[in-house]
Image (cartoon, rainbow, N blue to C red; front, side):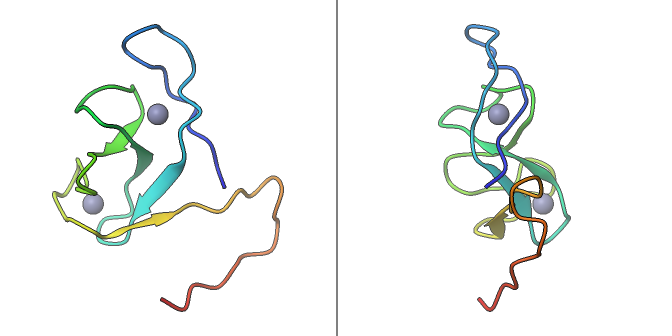
Length: 75
Ligand SMILES: [Zn+2]
Ligand SMILES: [Zn+2]
C-alpha cells in the first residue's frame, strides 16, 4: 500500500501512514485519530473525508511503485 509523505504536526516527522482515496471526490490522504494531525491528512478516524464530508467512502491506495499492475476492486 502507498505511504503518506505528509508531515506530522506534532513532531515534524514524516507520517508514513496508510494512504486512502475517497470514492466520492477522489481526495487522497492518510487517516488520523485527530483532525489536522498530518499535513497530508485526508480522513478522520470516523472514515469521514475531510474534503467532501462523505463517510465510509475510502479505499486503500495501491502502492504503484511496488505493484505496477492495478488490482481490481470488486467490493
Ligand atoms: Zn499523513
Ligand atoms: Zn471526499
